[in-house]
Image (cartoon, rainbow, N blue to C red; front, top):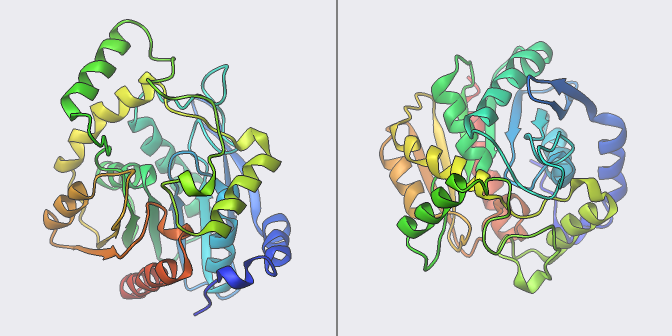
Length: 315
């Protein structure tokens, strides 16, 4: 199995860019609300397909290294930029503002993408690979729509917001009041337009080179940039999250937990895994939130677990 490494990442950039520009097929999917960007690639001897549901702020461009790696390991890959981020349509005049009207709109998009794009180009076994917000989207999709996915690999799924020292009740009350007063399109308290934080201030990864490449990608293409969340986005999330506990996922599930996550609440991940007999959970030592963009000593074991999981369901 091939693993991309930090030490070779700069040397491999030309190969990664060549793959991204010339191998990856890019197109757009028209939905009732707007146009979504997506991409896919199928190696000649693909063993199965991996369909990626990325996290908030993320998109296809950020996943270049991972897509290239999956492709070189003979996996067909499909990825969609969720509404309001990446190269997909933005809801508001200020395109930096994170907003969604209803959280379930995300899973409706994923269903349309699966039916009209993935299933049109791939008829073999497939798995959902979902990170953070994309994990919540994937879970709702799997419990709501008819599908034939063989399994789902969840990387630090957003099942509960990490509110640190602020009580959840206080956060919910403040967001509900803001929505009632008509501030759903306004930034939530402390949120602002895209700002590239220095590496030593970030809570996403401990891999300096991968973090810097992410920031360089967004600097080179400003249209990818997304700022903080609005009260409307928070309201949609807070309204949706309690339903996660009631979702019944019948296919095999693997939950990858980041030990030092400061973005999502890990207690909710344990609860999800314990409530499903078909679920496995693993905590990755010293990992921050973005397992796919971590240091090699964290990222490689996480990817090994992903590949082992995929092999177990590819029957």
